[in-house]
Length: 578
Image (cartoon, rainbow, N blue to C red):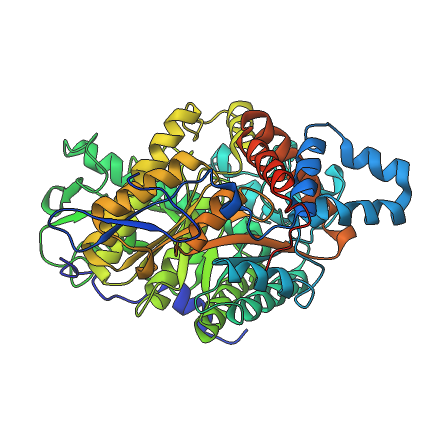
């Protein structure tokens, strides 16, 4: 049951204080889901045939199908975009891009020009998550300098205790390295962060006008100096480690994360009165035990943001500052970042838009997830507005999902999640090996698949039990989509409830997106947009991603050819979508 602990209904303190001051059963056919009634159930079961190309590509003209085939073929060649620019010159290059890569993967240059595509997709049941995909075209040297300047505190040299993982390293300063499917922001100044916030606000407004429950995506590293995310992440990880350390001392190590409970009368946390006092009174109730969720609440109640950045010493239990001191400007930068997040969340509520916070590198992610959780506790009281993103290639993904679901139960708010496999694997593995900390990534692709399905199944069961959780299955993996449909049938979850969403990238996997949409499932395309010459960095990485994607999966090209040949044979070669 929901509620019941000392933390129930407690409002977020970290965020609230920061913003207070100014500053398969039957085949799918003909665009209609087949339904069969099972014995003893009044719910219809839905199954979709994803190889019915006439239905899957109903929204595409034959020229668009041929363009897809050409682009996917070009993606198999290395350096195609850089060579094209040199050979064609700027003007011809832009025209070639619009006819190929840009036309395939980008909706248009601005909010006005993307409307026809969005409206056409909506007629086939496919919504949009708008994504303004302009990036700075920085050299590697420029990116490294910006990262080092923005991730190193004035006081960091005085704090040798900072862990390797949470220190900026020049070799990995260019966070674009080895990352092909995520945009990257580098901190320049506070004015630039305000510009990014305005861009996100425009996307929220446009998303609000596009559907009854639109989505918009944001990235935390666009909204403030990443130094704060590094430091706050280290603090959160050390607090969690301290809990595990105390649990082990009480003989409760090795249990599932939510089964570990510390007995208060056996705690030995040194002689600091402020630390000891946290284990009494209203904060933790009177059960005599605390679990990790109770423990996490201990770092909510501070006034200065920089005072959050203290860590417990494993040996003494004493609280120690992560850094020796903070400048006034650093304090203001932290506060402004949280204020921008708050502005975006309130704007999303105002426009009826669901806000998805993208996942990023593991050295930023604990802070990103915690701040997103704080927004959920404030804004997800009536319905799920804020969605957190969980990267299932991480070894700790299930622990993170299960803890956040449990917190939503206790505090009675709506849990919202987007599940992805992850975008930073190669970079994360290389950084961990080079710098010398444990690889956070699952050992192989199969382990990641199992983790994804484990997390997804947990959230689906929560939806079935409470109807208060929502999940976006952001995946191009057909087996994962089929797994989701099967579990929805088993759990009695219907598409009309709009609790389970699907997401794919524009220009990819239409054979999954459009059958789902026409069958009544809420499905969304990530829709990049922006001026052609300014989205070249995005397009270059999309070409890279498709090179790897198309090498491993020929199904999409085979289905495209199947539909082209079907139209030729039937005389529909000049087919235009309705």
